[in-house]
Amino acid sequence: MSLSAGGGAPKTKVLAVSILKFTPGSYAILQSLFPLPSRSTLQSLLNTVQCRMGMNAHVFIILKDNVQTMSNKGGMCCLMLDEISIRD
Image (cartoon, rainbow, N blue to C red):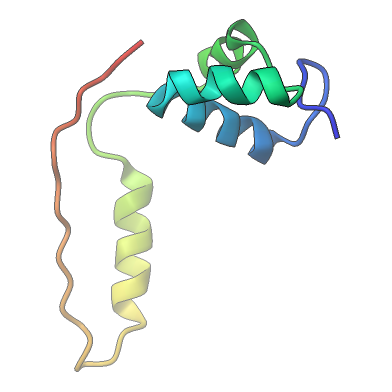
C-alpha cells in the first residue's frame, strides 16, 4: 500500500501528519524507509481542514448525549480545558 500523494487511506495520512507534527525527525527517518507522503503533500492536506478557535460545539453535544445515558451513580462529569500552542 502506497501512502504517496495520490494513494493511501485518509486515516493513514492523518497518522503521517501526526508523526510529522510531533516528531519531524522521526518522520524523516520513516520517510527514508517507507513510501510516505512528502511534507508538502501533508501540508496541503492540513490546508483543507477548516478550523476555528474557540469551543467546539460537537464536544458539548457528545458530552450531553453521554451524560443523559449515564445512571444516577455515574451522572457526574467534568470537562477540563487547557491552552495549547498553535504551530504552523
